[in-house]
Amino acid sequence: MSAPSPFFANAFDSDLRGDGLFLAESPRVIRRALHAMHADELGRARMTPRVRPLELLACDAAIEEIGDAVGYFPLVVHRIEHDELTDLTGYRMHDGAIMLCSRPGEPNAKRRKSEDAACADLDAFAAVLPATCTVLAGDGIVHTDNIGSLFRNAACFGDAALLLSERCGDPLHRKAIRIASGRSFTVPWARATMLHQALTELRDRHGFALIAVEDCPGAQPLWEAPMPPRCVFVFGAEGAGVRQATMDVCGMTVHLPMQTQHALREADDVPSLNVAVTSALVLGERRRRQSQSVAGSA
Image 1: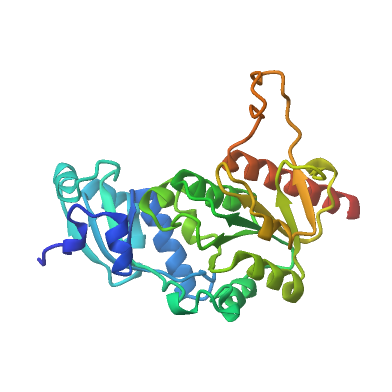
Image 2: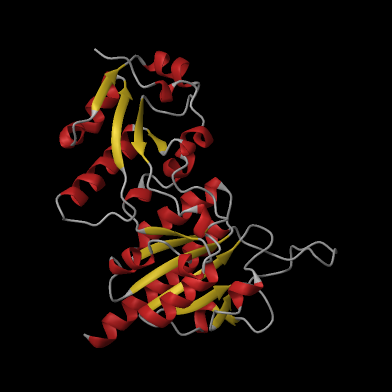
């Protein structure tokens, strides 16, 4: 039997990224990833962007949990003991299985300042979005936990996709994939080199309303704001919020009204919510409105 790829040994996500690769871990995530890739191969679903498996390194119990999905592709499978897997990879949070995959191509760095390169795959991204759709746009969100949570929230509330600015964290970082519970493979997403222009194209060419989520003067309470069938909700970076250049292309700004009785006396001690929580509340309100609309038309 051939030896596992050297990419498994003490693998760092940043090193793998340079080689056009990434790792997915845990039987549940890997099974979900293989099902998504297989559905894409059969034309039953469209994965955007497209990734493919290369090698699987797993213990017997994990392979059994992954089940028939192992046979969907000509996947090189290496059986290994659980402790040996930890020693080889230098990583404990794997639940007995790690899969090496090919990474989709990043936008050409030479074109990043071009007006034609706002989002290299915007047309392919827009083509998979349904008539009624919610896009979560990240404007510089960098924390791995937040990126993974955005994918998981989008999957749980349905008909949602992600558009990430160039400054956002890596959605194919193995921790982000794990936090997303493998939904990084089932939720359509794209990377924008110039977010404000990509948003403008979604508005002008594809009929999306652009809504910034930011606590600022003039923002409407989320519960009172109109929500057309196609909406992009824009969330800003941790701490800094939505950039002004991005705010300028949005036709509306909404906020979540919050209580202040637990604030300290410092002037800048204002209440705030993590983007993972905020996006879940926004999507929940969006789903509530859609349910009311369906009930009202029945």
